[in-house]
Image 1 (cartoon, rainbow, N blue to C red):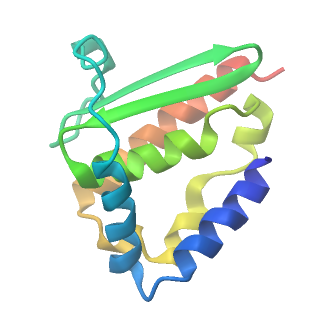
Image 2: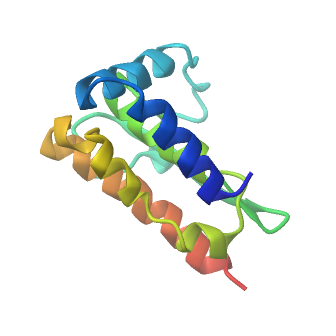
Length: 137
């Protein structure tokens, strides 16, 4: 599935809910079901600096595709960061660079985030973009 197709799927699923708070609540409920990553994943070198919540993130390139994973001690941050990681994982760098996460704003999800949580979201996007830029051919 392409990122454009994933975007339509996510947008359709989330737009079916009444408002941004309900959409964020759905993402948080999904994040609750994801088990915490093992202790070695939660190493200091994987921490994203500048976030009030602890947010761990890894990025790697495998067979020309970018792969991302994250975890957080905040369910909201885990939900939003996880949405981005799931969305972009398994895609080619050029495709990632052609699809920024701006499609989330009209869904009202980012409006209900504190400035610090929006900062975490932008830091994850920055890291995703950096790996894609480093591996684009």
